Amino acid sequence: MKDTKNVVGDPVQATAAFKRRFMYRMVFVLAGGMFLDGYILGIFGPVTGSMTEDLDLSTLWEGLIAAGPLFGILLGSPIGGWAGDKFGRKPLFLIDMSLFVVASGVQFFVDSPEVLFAVRFAMGVAIGVEYSVGWPLMSEFAPARLRGRLLGLTLVAWYAGFMLAFLFGYLLEQFTAVDWRVILGSSTIIAVVLFLFRIGLPESPRWLWNQGRRDEAMAVAHRYMESPDEMADVQREDTKHGTFSMLFSRQYWRSTLFVSMFWFCGVAPYFAIATFADSVLSGYGLGGGLAGGVGLSAVALVAVIITVLLVDKAGRRAMTVPPQWAAAVVLAVIGLWGGAPPLAVLILFLVFSFVNAMYNTLTGIYPGEVFPTEIRGIGTGFAAAVSRVGAGLGTFLLPWSMVNLGSATTMLIASGVAFVGAGLSQWLAPETKGKSLTEAAAGFSH
Image (cartoon, rainbow, N blue to C red):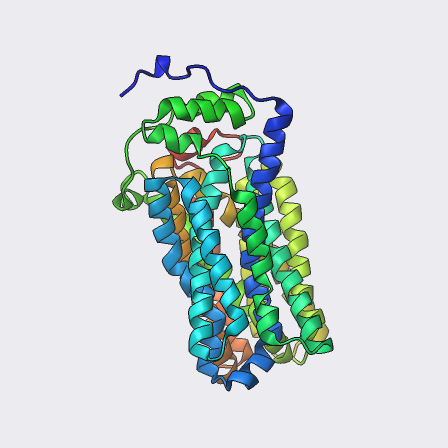
């Protein structure tokens, strides 16, 4: 292996303006991927009625198709994480969007529940790869002082995608004769734009260094990274190759447990309630529709924006632990307050949506920080897979639970999941504010 004293060579220098433009482009394509994820999930709710009637869907098929992308993420995220750690972030970043373009386009021609499930499952696979490659790539380029904010912006994009898709789909479904296949297939346009903007992006310098390609690593670092401190931190990277078993080693099992279950407990209640906002609110005597679906997502979007603005100042734990306890208590009140007026229930749901979105913003920040480069992809991918078990089960089981167990019991189950997540974060959530990526991943501390 080459001596680290003689690896810099004559790297291509770049101006500060060039580096800023690169970071803007990186944020755009990464946030775009998350916007797309939120979009394909949000667009489903408004077309459920016409789709169910056209394809003569049973309750089982309705739940399966709604959860299809989530189950796809369950497969795609660990595979993408493993491949990203082994073959690099750059090739996977294009491959996943290529798959999404194809799968999304097929939605225009769906003629059976089996085909629709398969297509949306494939899109989920692509998004799973996006999670396990996109966040590591951003964390490996972002400066420490802005890392939380830049990673958090991707969650702003997710909630914006979910909300705008719900609004777009609702308006087309209610006021036009546009076929539901065209509404679902509209995600193809977004995917094509993102694919084109990703062409030519560089490989992660930290991944290159980890692979022993040190000259290339420092050339990329000098050309694209902001400060000398960030470039120097690249040279502190380990060169050992990661394995799946490292996730459960003595050094990293706490990171794996925390990130995976924090994510699981955060998204399970949200996905279930937000995907079927209309039926959930109707169960409490509230008119759902546009006001319900968009209202919950709009409140969540505001919460994410606030969290992004504060996370690099107040710290990670302050944005994680208190909001989790608040979400658990709010869901418990909804479940236990049997005779609550509809307005009070609506306010409680809006409060839940707000605090839940606050700590869910950290699901886009923690994975890239607490895992080292050699397992950052597979660690993020594994955690994403675990989280999508929760999201998929929540989305799949909520319609059944609302009918067979009732609204109150369903909300108490959701509250129990939130309480588990709050307790885990109280115990394990680390503080990584202001640390270099090497420092953040080197040890697990509060």
